[in-house]
Length: 46
Image (tube, rainbow, N blue to C red):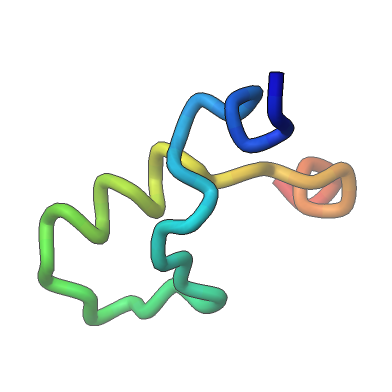
């Protein structure tokens, strides 16, 4: 088994480093929301 095969999603896909508030591409919005990770620091602010 290769490391690449251990991931659910394609690890070679384009990943935006910054979420843009004015984003209007629904596919990009869906990807960003589905992959969003709440860190310990963010959880403390919520």
